[in-house]
Image (tube, rainbow, N blue to C red):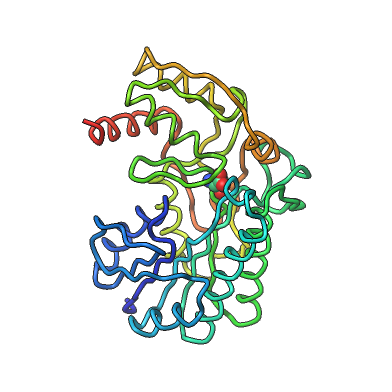
Length: 314
Ligand code: AKB
């Protein structure tokens, strides 16, 4: 196997925290370089303070460690992104351009770029949203992801750069908190339940959204990156599905274990974003091309979330 050296940008975020540990296990801690704007004092391994919008800084990390693969996780998410739209566009696009250019110019052999269900807008079938509908996103974050998918495809076609991408649903995990997304309620609800607090939900009770458990999300990322290049037929971004549920459903499942748990609903501006997204996703192409199969549903995910968070809070 070729000796790989991995750089993760945005490594301190919800996905990055967990993905970094998995990549350390796979490639050895010495071959994984985590980077972000700030160092988490508990982090174990190689870390570089890096602003991925600064091309020269990114290039010097790539050269210093002889990086061969980049997992580019930097992004301002859907809800936070709406507060400063132009700034969101700048950060999301500039950091991606830097990663694509540094990869093209300095011999990176693979790039991972996360996309999102935020690429979909009002024009799609809400149930089992297909791989290739008309994309009219409602948020700047979604617009940046549609543009980013097309740039990934362009770099692949024009320069032969092996960029691979997944459209993540809302990711639910116990190891780290999400920041500034519309699906964040589905992580927060477990924390409140385990701490015996009531939960105020910023979405309506019946708002179905596509979601995925962190273990499945990380496994999908690694399986996609490990797949032989000739099996990757989608060079924009693959639809990825784990499960789909509404706040009232996750509440009902948590209540089976924590009967005193209470919920109230106070929808805010994030309701509008959620209403523009699919209820569920058709990921047939990912299943066909590289064998994707989720392992977690709402029930078995809830068991793990409650068990792990109880350990964390006790
Ligand atoms: C968000 O809610 O913005 C993210 C996403 C679905 O991309 N979790």
